[in-house]
Length: 444
Image (tube, rainbow, N blue to C red; front, side, top):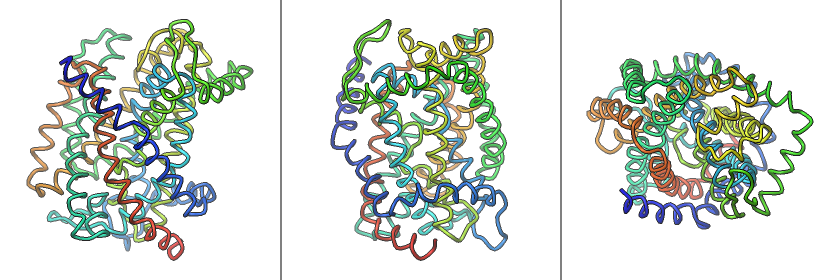
């Protein structure tokens, strides 16, 4: 295991080295400029479209409403990335890592917009009559036969990566935090989650969308209220906390308390890596959900899709980070979900850690559901619809195993697989960017 961990560390250092970081941020910045900052200009319009998208027209093609598509996407993104991921970013990269999470999110809005536009524009109907789409389909249908290998690579990485970022990481984080706060054995948590997930998966994307549309808004609001109370109690210290984030982003953080210190490159690396883990902009996963939306307008769905990045990182991740910094918990030596739980317990004595425990449990459950759909669609692209039942069985069996595995190893594996997924998708976005720009002008 030690040899494998060292190997993954080496691969992770390359995958999340300067080349990939520039590719991620550079692609988002290029798309943002090419769209003339449409994601920022159209943000109010996007929120308006979101609420109108709760009900779709019978004339629109698709399986779930535009609102449900966003909730399914958010179900897969709002999870350990917002709670454990933010904490891990601060632990490894210092408070400055949050600034780079913000930068990843801002340009990531353009990336997410472009992904959804292409997903709806190039989607297909499979043998079961379901609407399917995502990077593998816009690579195949947008770039042509000569790029089939790139679509195949993305589907392979996606089908396997789902078990890391979307399955074992989620199960492990929930099991860990419930064990530390409620003393529930990790194997019991794993089995209960596996049973719940299996029951929902039997209903396919429609049942996943229904559950996500109920749980995500409810838990998101509850979590934001809990974090908001802590922030309001320390409102006078917020400017100092933000100043610390901005300063450390460009200077690094000296060792203090239980914090070991971090340089500028660590802040950038872990800020971008955890930012992508949290909002998934550039990975190519969210467009798989948006391709199932009942809509005939790819630009409209793109505007709704970009809200996922804004809500996930700019709102929820920022609030988690402020709670960790304002309570001083970032110096405690804790990491992952335990650091977030420590921060909330400090800010809301008596029940703060329960906000994190139950919030993480709900968020991770919805993430398990959303990512099961992503992985399933990637596997279907390679092997056809016959693989779906088998993929679902493997997915459910992996949950209790993930609950009992080593957290550090799982995070490392997830980082590597995320980076490998992003590369084919980012190449496709750059090559198909003229289509995105053209559609944005003609279908706006």
